[in-house]
Length: 312
Image (cartoon, rainbow, N blue to C red; front, side):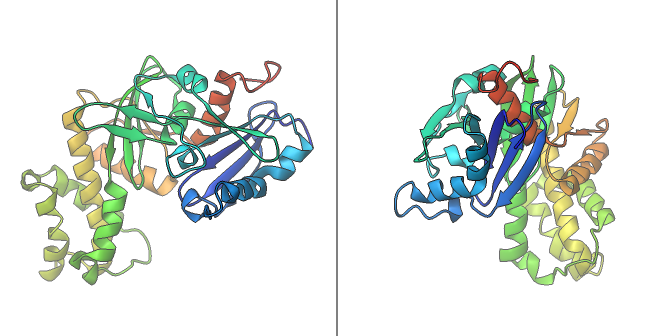
């Protein structure tokens, strides 16, 4: 096997992604396993995590036993292999690199877990895994980085430091409303995404009617269908637009200036957020691909795990 200066794991709730890096900091090989922390058997202590770890990268480690191994995500949560204590914001790349939690595996390899971040206050906020994506997405000193998903995060970066962030449960609420409420009863799956319906939902979130609040406007998903103004195939995308629109409207109250914006996530979600942000009058948001992998490499470099002879 060619030179492997780093093995890295993105170990989340439902899946485990493993990366083998080359000397230039590029991913030479990757794989994905259905071995997220909620799918690992832990009745026999840490043995379940040990097995998943070996399945993910044991062949790479045996071929290159000196390669350091780093991980981010829920593997460092209280339900993970070992809890990596939250680091307070403000925090930068070097702070993350200095706060790694070590786990010695039964094979003798040491796994270095990146800490999550906490924003303290009357309503504390936390992230775990997204801090690494942000580390990989930072290309300028000041920006807002949006990470749409189950729990969308909006992260304020100043002087390359994470100084604040806000969480919106947009994706989880959307899934729950579609699957477990009356709104889902009249929805039908469309053959393709209905982006005009999504735009319509965003427009409602920007309209005077939105002053009644999200709990009021989401009911229009049903009532517009009842009066024949919204097709069953369009209702899910309309609801998606409503929720994303309310998220962005709320964010506007929290941020004096929401630019420049960088988005990190799946292409489909990021494109939706680009549309919604444009409707709110923001400049076109950039999309950062490969942020997780790049962040893992950068934190490993900051921690001194990657030899100086390699590109950092």
